[in-house]
Image (cartoon, helix red, strand yellow):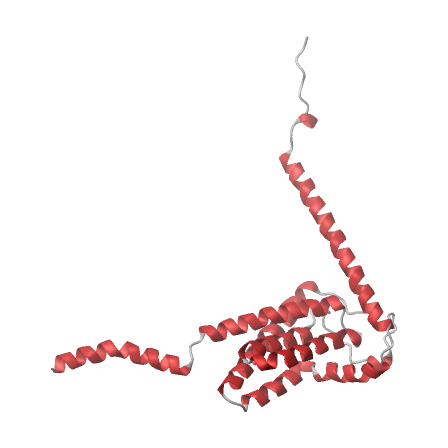
Length: 233
């Protein structure tokens, strides 16, 4: 009686198993992202198909006014004319816009490169149209900057949080309403805006104020003054 032989097929292949598992996870992620894109497209189509003649012109003007963060900069200018706290809120808000804009336009859009929606195929009414940007669709830079400004200013100046948050939400929705972004682009822009505001607030907290810097400078000079005084005595 001969001993059973071992063939290559019987030998465990951990590398192959790992590849199979990785391939399975990749297919699952692909399926999930496919479903999310389908939902995103369906939401975009639903907004496009819903007649809202009263809102169309207002949201078109709002979307246009938010180009290059013009609304946020105007608010920051008004805040800068106020007291110390409003001025700080304006400064941090503008810093948050800078972080959000750079992150969205220099990183997000170049990495993802999602094509803009087909506004004509979705039959978005002409009354809603703003100029279709040539940049990638993901994420929404308008939303990222508006949310970053609203979040940063709202933290420093709490009474401004609700109105600025509502304005940022309206700006984000206007980008879908005018047909230049999918809802997913706007959602990603909002997340990026919150993260950008957090970065700007952290940077502001890490930077000591002028008064604190003066106290630190005086504190550093105390030992030298004390030694000098002792020597003179």
